[in-house]
Length: 321
Length: 278
Image 1 (tube, each protein chain N blue to C red):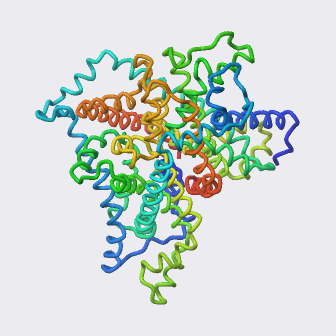
Image 2 (cartoon, rainbow over the protein chains, first blue to last red):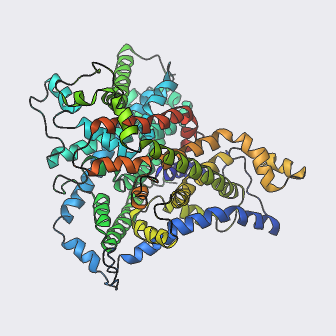
Image 3 (cartoon, chains in turn red, cyan):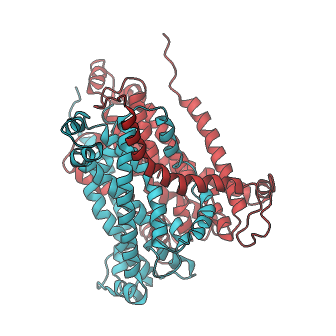
């Protein structure tokens, strides 16, 4: 779902500074007849998104300040910050926040590192590169929920293939109860998420790498720069903006991605692997839409704040003029 | 000049790429193998990495003991209709956003992007109540309508990128020849953009085919359930029948895998357009 946003960033970068010389389109002036056509063309999209996305979203946001339980709709009065207070006073809230951070950081860092390495290796053409990319693409065709199920089966304590392989190699000597113990369960769900996300980074970084001109590498080679020096002085700076923004949107996306956890552990054992969004599902299923919406708003504001700080921190520094 | 790869770097490259490939493909391999084992042998040690005898019992059971065939038909219907309509609608909105400069353009794009950042669960409650009022709970029509709305923002942004790669002289020539804008769009632009449109359609289709939470919330009769809802039903019971589960998983993944493999080039193009051109 967040893919589009990422794409937008990549494109935004290319068109922001310079005039869009790569685009064939001249944005044109138009008369009233054209304006009417435009309106007619936009209308279906606007109506659908308005009715089925924006209306429920806005309507859901105000529920955060009401007592709104599906099981008892006799009293849906305004409760101010009541739902937020209930959340903050919940002893589990700390665990959930901590898990969310572990989930995001633990998934993101390996995704970036492995994805980056993969992209560097794929940059140069080789035989079967196309076929290789198509195979590597495979996780994308699978839903998050199914990925969760695949890994739940592989991490099965008794008949799971992960334990079997680890024991064959001799890393462990007795089966690990992967999904029954909080620490192991957290590791397992993060491994599943890394597996899912590496391809995406590889593809985005590869695209960015291919946009760096060969002349820059040639110039560096002439200046006698080694591989490592070239990487840090040419490659990294050239793709840093794309990389930074891709990472930001990916963070937002992972934050909002409960599917794998929901399928693998359902937040268990004993609610120890809940992140904010899986907890939100749990509350929703209990019918407490007020509290769920409050949690949703917390997510939105946290992410907005984070995005603002992040963008300030990674914004390319202005060169001295 | 970039010199020839050394033996060392070549070897490390091959090793790294091989490991990545094996790790990526292994879960699929494993679920296929599990699905082909006879139900009893799934839970026996030591594990077989290749079934002693290939059995289709899990698949047969899926269709005889559950309504999996019906779920597949439902998913196919819902995903096809929703993806088609969403692609058509997005084609129009993407065209406007790609071709014209108007004051609300940034706002419309921003509004589309925003839908991707907000956790969908905020909307779930009101959506459910709205669908109750429309009498569209547990109805394929209702699910299709929502899926269309879910697909439109992404599809519009993706298609807009493809439009910008097509010169606008094309449809202008057609309009001078007397075509209306709409027929110019469909007769002249659509054929040229077919790969991009196909990729967008496939992306929509796969998203709808895979969608879980909306479907779980809204659909509850066997007659209307989609595949993900049925799969989710497998885990709500305490014991998971991994044989049926893996057979169902294979049947769910393989179709999307096949169409993704064909379209992956165009999907990547759609996602990374701009970055490649710099």
